[in-house]
Image (cartoon, rainbow, N blue to C red; front, top):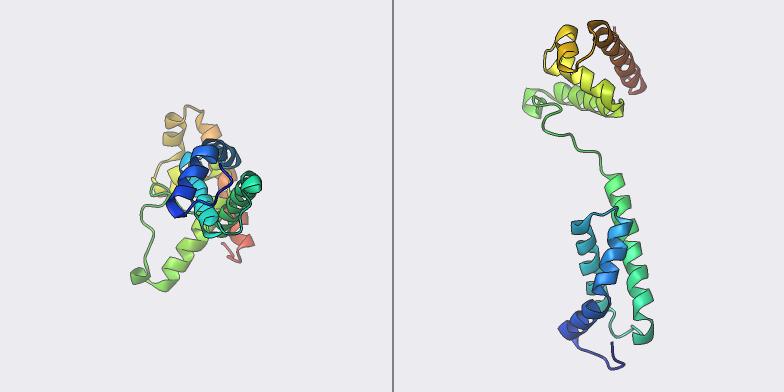
Amino acid sequence: MGSTQLPGEELIRALYAEHGSSLLAFVQRLLNGDRAAAEDIVQETLLRAWRHSAELDVERVRPWLFTTARHLVVDALRARDARPAEASAGELPNVPTIDGGADAALNAAIVLDALRSLTDPHRAILIDYFYRGRTAAEIAVERDMPPGTARSRVYYAMRAMRLALQERGVDGP
């Protein structure tokens, strides 16, 4: 980039032409390969460069861009971690709504939170057993395991679920 001050859109185009590909690669590495999120971060970085164009030193613009992008990545990751995890549509297809009663909705939220805290194998076996209505024998056939193994996995998954619910203040039978 030259030493003259470029107005608005020309500045962004010049910055992107000179630093865009390396900035995108840097941000994408920070985001574990998420290209769409990296493109959003690069766009926000260039927008901030445009907003601060009067203060930018053309000799030090590259470090400023990379530092700003890194800060934006950190902010985005913190924001994502602050949001509650989303449940997939397949996990619990019949989650009660407030129309079904506030208590039912609260109970479903507690159960869902407890399910999320389980290991993937425990969660999968409980979903098969309770929500899909499979017996231990059916699970054994579907998962290609001995029936006794399926029964013991259901047992240990239920113990883990009971503990997870107790940690959330729910006392079971």
